[in-house]
Length: 622
Image 1 (cartoon, rainbow, N blue to C red):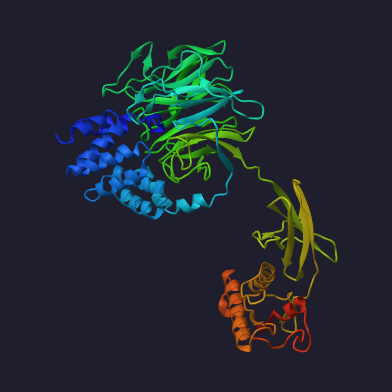
Image 2: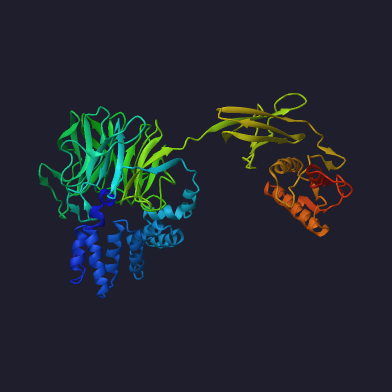
């Protein structure tokens, strides 16, 4: 149902096909032009059974299913429609339909065809600039939880917005209304429901007053003083049903006045337009501006988002938000939060499928990620930063009706600012320029940082963790310290580091480079030591070094020799990755030679075995 409320009636329907392709398709085309997509789909399917299998029929049949979110059938027909002379918009809708089924690889293939046919389209430009966007969105850390609301029905319910202690939303549940030909559901009405202090929503009731009519009413917002409601309705007022020159009634924004809890005195606004749609009002928390969607001429694409001044219930000076927010696709359902963040839905920006919810903040548009977004349509996001709660509408899998309203709740992220301070253990003075890192109990290591003039570096971690801080610096032995962080805002740990000779008798004195049993990868503690080696070799550019790696006696001689050779190669690769020419470093795997503890003659502990799994470094050229 929200496809109607994207306001694209003109764009997706009548203007595209004002005349039937042939006498054979005339009946189906007329149904399509009247936006009766359910009936149109049946008529086109009947044509296929009669052997009328043209690109026109497959395209219109695909569109009829697409506009009612039947993406499986849309996909099937678009696949046939693009076999010869594919049209860009058909390719684009086909790619969107494939994403709805999570067929992302094939969707990307079709998007490449679309981009090649229509390279100037901003949707094509976005795709070419970031073809791996799906993985990037899927990898986003979840910031919200979502939960279906018990007041959803088998009919379409969407666009919930909370104002004070009431929740308002649009619904097709009123069975006393006539069915709309688009999807055979009743015309939309606005409902309201009380919300108790615990957030429990009471039984919804039809909005009191004169707002609801026998035609569509939908998205709304109310001024902060509670005096005015601005809402979306088809062009119908005082019994007068206005139609555009194409024969269709467009959506417009109307205003009602609060009269003792009932909404009366419905009037048009200065945004009224007979030839194009306007809708989805959202009012700033100071009541001085209103955001809305419109398909007015001169925009970026299908529907664009605008901002206008609002004073004493009157709207003036609308301004298009421009190409950062608006695309050549559909950008709609704006919601302006109390902190000034704009949330909106779009199928023009890169998303997971259908309409995705985006946020516009600090000049940047960002996809909200899962679970706010899904592979299907997600729209009409409303949210309170103060409570961390809000609503999103979606036709995702598992819902009760065509569109359902989901509660969203912010995931509270507990973070601690951990300061690691490197200190000279002999003088007690801070050590600037030391390399420090943090590792949690699961072995996850944060990227190393260099301490500042006060010997400090700050890391942001989660709460309730056991952490190990490590530090390394040329001419110092590496240090290590542990700490536990609970749910405090800040924590500090000091890493004591003792000075050491830089070179003694051609031996570079580092703490031993240890390896885990049967492993050749560089451990985080080993990386810190190798960073010190790298620092020394960069300081002395003619220095050449030989690394020798050893294993303990567990395993066969041949296995341990091969293992230490792999470890030696790991050291060379690591040092090379840090900018040192590999020709300056040679490495040799020594197998079980020269054990630190003779574990063949005694029973060794794990710690004693580890002493033999080491690397040693000798200067071969100064």
